[in-house]
Length: 79
Image (cartoon, rainbow, N blue to C red; front, side, top):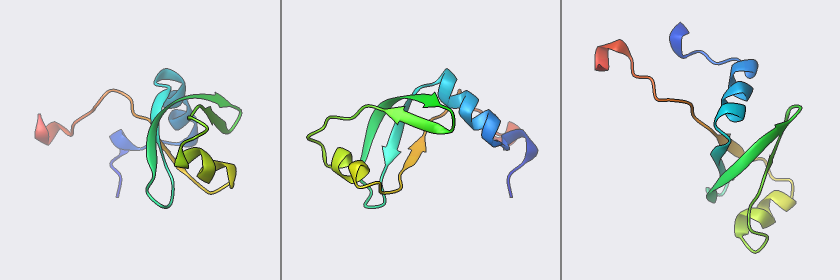
């Protein structure tokens, strides 16, 4: 269950990436790095060091999770 105030559709998610382009890329083997990203259509373009294990995983076209966040919002019960 996701309360309406925390719901995020694709348009909202892409707007977060545009507003906050520094995020974390996480691969299935849990390799992760903070990466600057830009959006090109429905694709995220980022920069990692070629020598990193993350770059090798991405070159293999392995799926990855991108985590970007906007300003922190807490439920009113936690304020």
